[in-house]
Length: 353
Image (cartoon, rainbow, N blue to C red; front, side):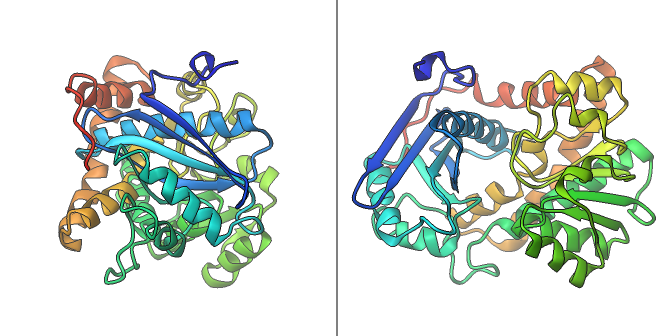
């Protein structure tokens, strides 16, 4: 099957495959759309079960970045990079340097940043081979790491969803089930705990769950049990595709609001959520805090300006929720409509050189 025949190919402008045998690098960069500006998106490293799994992920993630930047009001397009490999065992300096050289060859059409399996130090290594790297800011509060801002934006959006679904202005007395308490999930958990929510967490890495239990008083359940937890909000903060026609039947929560990308295994799941009275908070709207942070770092704008922009996530979601109810549509369909109005009608912009 060619890339053009792949079910997740959505008129992507470019898909590049990188192979560097000396370092073991096998990577894919997908550029979905650059109408609003150069494609900015993180570099994910994961031990994919197959090449096809990696291709599916990069195609879906890059499209999501286009929609995310458009809804967030940024002059950026959507792209993504995935490295096939275990970040805990396979990553090396030579691999990252080779990736930087390949990215440099794209002449600015794609700008990379950290993501699952990569970090700010990794981006610093890549920056030795290319200038097309974002999220490196040694002077910034988090050293360029956008994870805390992604978590904060998710928290802002989660509160908006709670207010809309439960008509409640705070989180006191509510239970949030968090699937994945890594970098973003743990920061989100801290915000929720400080806001008075009760926490139930799961993670495929036991040390992450243990940290949440010890530091935040969270109750830990097995990864397979998190869906059925008696909670008000389900917050997916791990890899995508966890909400499918089977797991949705286990959910007791009436709000889904988490930081993971591509949470729905299939778009049709949104119809089931609507039928079941579950308010789905479109993931790429909710988790846009990280890309907003990186965009402001690139433009050297103040943290205050950046946080003010992130706070608008709540207002955007409320507009989407209201439109969805008025039109009787799933929230993800309305979010897509908002994004497409912003980027499809725009003429393609030349990538930064």
